[in-house]
Length: 120
Image (cartoon, rainbow, N blue to C red; front, side):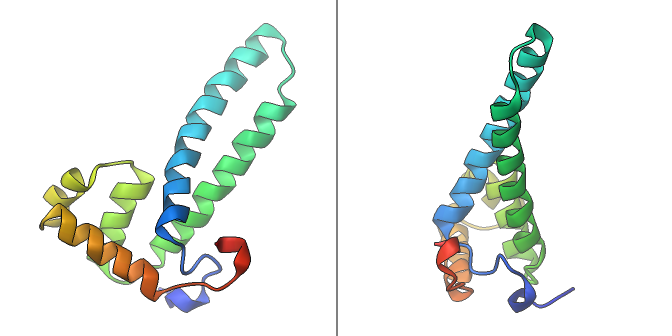
């Protein structure tokens, strides 16, 4: 597996990961709107753009999380930010206290900070 430093998305902040969760919601909403708009003959270009942007955001975060070499942290980040689980639910699977697991993930993300202003 490539080193984390080799990935464009390294150092994603917790806020950036929260954006991923919002992107997941946006994908679901846009997909439903797109289906309804297509069925009713409404213009779909704006919805398609929003859907594509949300899918791109999700793919970038998935790429970064998949590059995490620590299996416990990678699993926790996947469950929390890609699947939308609560920290309590994540802690049940990853064995530990929710607050400790959350702090471990925050420390990991902070330690792999990426200084590109586009990612702030």
